[in-house]
Length: 298
Image (tube, rainbow, N blue to C red; front, top):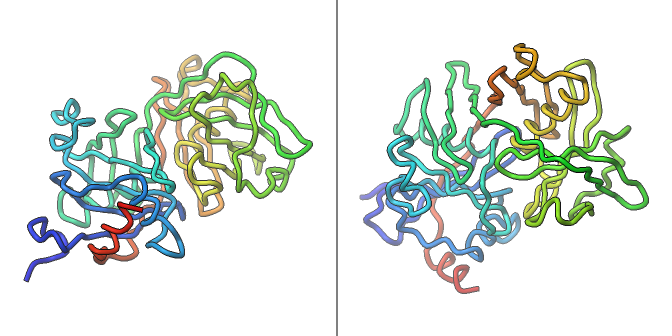
C-alpha cells in the first residue's frame, strides 16, 4: 500500500491543514510540481463549506521543479507556491511560511534550526526553535513616498504605505470596531498607490511597544492573522513613535496582537525584520481525485 505522500499514485492526493495564529491553510505536498492547481481548484479547496477550508493554500514544491523558483533552487530547496483563498497568486505570506516550515519538519525534510524557503517575494530565512515557535526573516520594509487614505463608511484615516514584498496600508484608529465588517476591501486613495490592490490594517495601541490589529487581506477578506501585515504595522508604529533602527542602530521590537493570537516583530539595525510566532499542523488526509477534477473544470 502506498502512503498519502506517494506521488506515483495519481488517485492519491495528500493534503494537510495547518494554521499560524489562526491564519489557516490547506497544504498540498507536491515536490515535483505534478498537481494541476488552477485558481478554480484552489478556491474550491479553500471553500469553508464545500471544500476543506482555509485563508489560502500552500503548494509545497521543490524549487528546481517550478519555473518561478528555479533561479532560487541553489539557495532554497523548497518553494512556497502560495495562493490566496480565491485562487489568486500572492507574493508572500508570513504566517504561511511558518506553517510551510512546520510541514517540512513534520514530513522529515528538515529538522530544528535554520532553513531557507523560496517565495515569490524572494528567499526567506526560517528558524524552527526547540520550543516550537518559528521565526521568519521577512526581509526589509519599503516605505513608498506619498500620502494614502483608507475609508470605512463615513470615516477615513491617513495610512502608512508599507511594502513587505506585498502592499499594505496601515491606519491607526481609536477603536478596532471602526474597521467595520471588513468583508469587502476598504476603499483607498489615490488608486495609483496600489494598482494591484492592498492589504489594509487597522491598528490600536495597547501599551508602549504593544499594538493590536484587524486586517482585510486582498483576495481573502478579514483574516484571523496576517504575518506581513503584522510586520508592516510594527514598522509603521515604530516610525510613528520616532524609532528607526537603521538610523539609531538599536533594534525595535513590537508585540502585535492579531485576532488569532500574538506575533513578536523585531526590526534590526540592518533593516531586516524578524517575525516569531506559532505554527500548528492540525490534520492530514486525502483529496478526492474526482472532486478535484470537477473543481478544476468549474
